[in-house]
Image 1 (cartoon, helix red, strand yellow):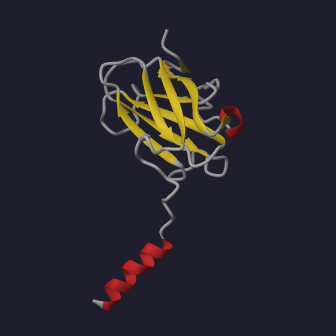
Image 2 (cartoon, rainbow, N blue to C red):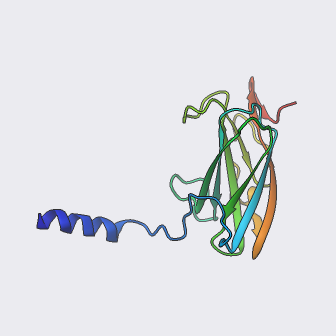
Image 3 (cartoon, rainbow, N blue to C red):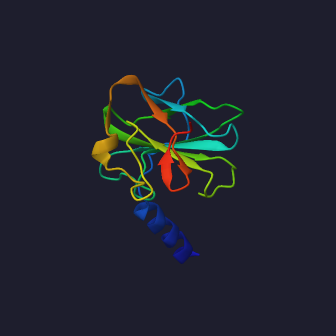
Amino acid sequence: MTRLVLLALLFLIAAPATAQRSTTGCTAATPHRLMVDIRGLRASTGGVRVQLYDQAGFLEKGRWLGRVEAPASGRREVVVCIPVPRPGTYGVAVRHDANANGKSDGGDGGAFSRDPRLSILRLKPSFAQVAIPVGAGTSRVSVTMNYRHGLSIGPES
């Protein structure tokens, strides 16, 4: 039993701090927030996932600062509020899981802040291409979803 308690304590000490990581949307008490206007959903089904990154953790698995999921709920445009730890420069990545199966597949879409041009050979932009300033209080950014069209990637027509 003592070993079990020690292992649990070691896990808690070694686990990364999650105080700055948010998986819920904004509340009235959220001091800094980013309103993400997601446009051009291919389908009004499934859900969207919005992830907020700083430069150090950009697009690295598990290194997001905030993550909010929302249903498409029959809409082709969705607005998601994501808490921001402090004013600064951030990048936003959005994924549309069109069939709500929890996996990335051919019908799903993606988007980034500042709408960088994507291609089948370059699906992940650099942080510099997506970096946006986020101030104190409420900031806004619009993103346009991109989907696969044969061998190309782009918005819906």
